[in-house]
Length: 69
Image (cartoon, rainbow, N blue to C red; front, side):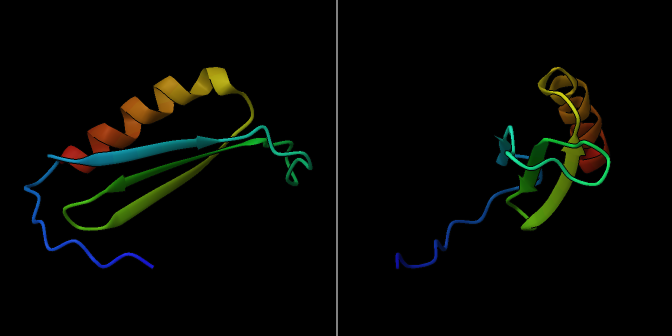
């Protein structure tokens, strides 16, 4: 397992985004994608379930706006 990075990032300097899916077995409300956004400076993850890949752009924009505040 690699070591832990000691690099310090200022607020919103590094954000990691991952879109996972489609998931083979939909969730209870037919969600088949998972969006994970991590603000590295605070190691704060935001997770969202999506019904379609087309909603990912709007969701990322909303999450980034919230994280910048």
